Amino acid sequence: EVQLVESGGGLVQPGRSLKLSCAASGFTFSNYYMAWVRQAPKKGLEWVATISTSGSRTYYPDSVKGRFTISRDNAKSSLYLQMNSLKSEDTATYYCARQEGAGYFDFWGPGTMVTVSS
Amino acid sequence: DIAITQSPSSVAVSVGETVTLSCKSSQSLLYSENNKDYLGWYQQKAGQTPKPLIYWATNRRTGVPDRFTGSGSGTDFTLIINSVQAEDLADYYCEQYFVYPLTFGSGTKLEIK
Image 1 (cartoon, helix red, strand yellow):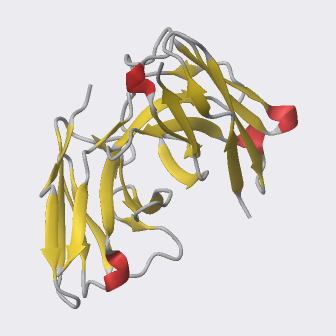
Image 2: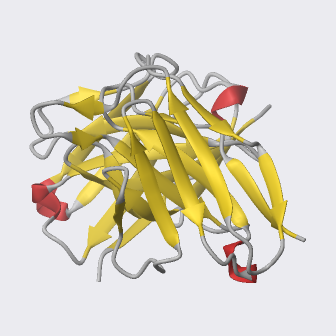
């Protein structure tokens, strides 16, 4: 059974950093692209980052480019999201998702909440 | 960036009725080399994680009831829910994965009368 479990969320002040983790199990992690998708309170879904199977390619929307870094450790079946220079608009639930090649998210974790506030 | 527009923003239907949700893309999502539309649909119930329903615009995920049907191609897509059940109360999102940045529509809230 595919399982994705995020951790690392919490309350952080604007301008500070936070690192999210996602532990994957139930599938061959190294064979899949992985991604982060977020959802601000009572808002829609927003794609945040994608990383290729080896980690050599990463993709971001302009809203987080230069501030967020996605990475992975295939030996540990783990995905990460380093978030720097956090802003109040980054407040959201962050979901770890398995990405089917082209970009369809076929499995999602339960999410971890990040609140950016002073 | 590809903009995705969903309509209506909310809709209320009675149990047993059929509802059609619309998803329009600002550019074609059809890749001519494989004849596939790079469009997916997700269902999100209140307080829950998004659940994948449809991929490649028309393919139902394993375990998704057959009352959910995806159709369309190019720039215009629909999710049809036949014989709506009370458990279908949820937000529905479409997503284009034709090109980065990946983008979602703003969602349609399905309410039960």
